[in-house]
Amino acid sequence: MNILKKLLALIIFGLALTAHSNERDVITIKGNHLHVNNEMYFMKGLCYHPVPKGETARSFYNLDQDLALMVEAGVNTIRVYEPIDDKEVLDKLDAAGIKVIISFGYNNPNAFDIATGGFIEYIQKYKDHNAILLWELGNEYNYHPEWFGGDINIWYKTLDIAAGLIQMIDESRPVSTAHGELPQDDVLAYGKNIDIWGVNVYRWDKPASILREWRIKNVKKPIYYAEAGADSYMATTQLGYFEGESQEAQADANRNILQAIIENKKHNAGVMLFQFTDGWWKAGNPDQHDKGGWAPNSGGVPYDGAPNEEWWGIVDIDRNKKLTFDVVKQAYTQN
Image 1 (tube, rainbow, N blue to C red):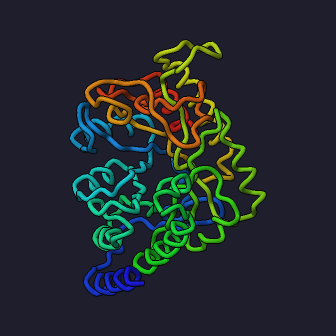
Image 2: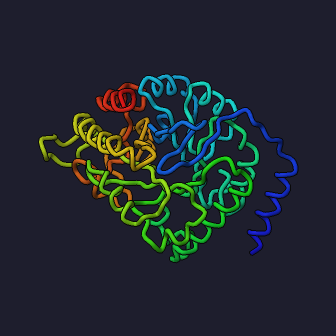
Image 3: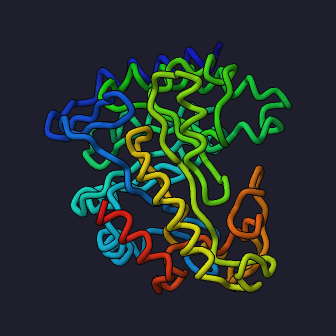
C-alpha cells in the first residue's frame, strides 16, 4: 500500500500546482469510437519508435522528415512505446495534425513508469498538450507473467489501479491498455477503469475476426488495433513469395489487413499499423539489417508465420518508401 499512498500524494500535489487549459481538443467516447470536438475520430495510425542505424535508443533526430512522410500517407495518429518528454516534439506533432497515444511501461524508472509513479508526474506535466489523444498502460504484458513473479493478476490489479489514478488527474482523456490478443472475461473483470481496449492482433491477414468475438462478449467499450501488420522478410518460400526480403508480401498483407479493419470501422476505433520504420536494433547487430527475431504469440504473422523483427517499417531505416507505403497511403487517404 505504500506505493498507492505515494501515488495519491503525487496526484494531490500535482492538482494543486497544475494550471488547466481549455484551448485544446475535446476527446470523448461515443459508442464504438473516439470523438474529437464531437466529430468521430477513426485512428489511422502507425506505431513509432525511431531508432537510428547503429544505435539502440529512440531518437527524434529525423522527426521533420518522418512527419512529412506520415502526413503524405494520411496518418492522423501515432503510438509510442514510452512517453515523449520533449514539448518541441509534441508541438511538431500537433502542428502536423497528428495525435499521439502515450504508453507507459511498468518497470522502467527512466521512462515515467508505473511502478515508481513516474507516469503520474508525466501526466501532470503534459496533460494540457493538444497532441495527446490517449493514455495507454502497458504493451501485451499478458504474455509475460514472469515479469510479475509468475502471477499475471498482479499486473491486472496494478493496471486497474493505475487507470483509476489517471482518471483522477485527467478526466478529459480516455485510458487504454494494449493487450496481446483478445482479453478474456477474467481480464475484463479486472479492467473496470479501462475506457478503451487496445489489442495487438496478428491473425494472418484476417484481423476482423476479433471484432466478432468482442461483440459476443458484449463489453460495451470500444476496441482498437494497437498493433497489426506484416514484415517485409520471408523466412521461407511459400504462397508465391520467395525467401528473403519481400516487399510484395508485406504490401499484399497490409492491404488485406487495412481493408478488413476499415471495412469494419463501425465496430472498431482504428488501427496502429506496426510500424513506421525498420528497427535494426531488435534482432542482432544494430549496424546491420539482420533477419530473425521472436515475439510471443506471433505465429500468425503473414505470410510465413515468422516475425522478422527488423523488417516491419513502411519505410526502411533511410526513409526510402517500401511498396507498402503506397498501400497505407491509399487506405488512409481514400477511406
